[in-house]
Amino acid sequence: MKLTKQQRTDLKMKFGGHCAYCGCELGDKWHADHIEAVKRDLEFIPGVGLRTTSEMLRPQNDTLENMNPACVPCNTNKSSMSLEMWRRSIEHYRDVQLLRDSTHARHLHRFGLIEIKSEPVVFFFEKYGASA
Image 1 (cartoon, rainbow, N blue to C red):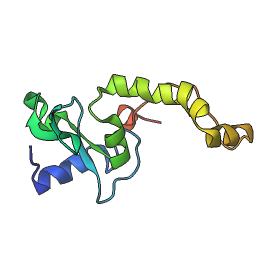
Image 2: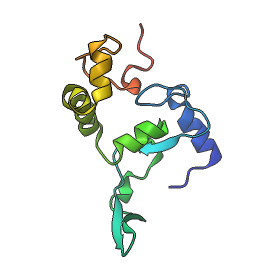
Image 3: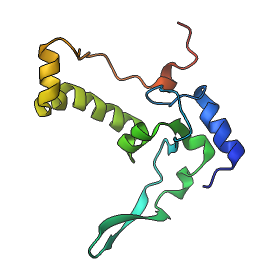
Image 4: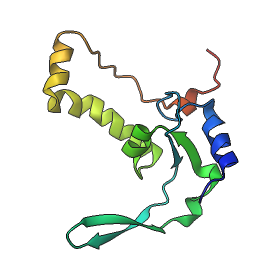
């Protein structure tokens, strides 16, 4: 669905102008994320590879109520995952991949410059508006 300028403004302010997921302040470049993915069809183009088409496999999810404001990195990383699948994916990055796959992260960790916390992943929208 193509959002009107007013709908985009209202969506951006859904969580006080912050990304629904990481909580960063949204600037001019941000995405309207489908909470439950619309899943776009894929097509193979010879010499190019797989590309998404504009055809939605779940058009019933293309509603304003199913959208959250998201920064570009969060929306790109979430892709078409459900919130719970994405939460588990982030936990996997932290618990398995970060120190295994990144020599830089291992080095920073050894010097005490980064700390890896085993706290549950809580999205910004889940604590937005809660009293401190």
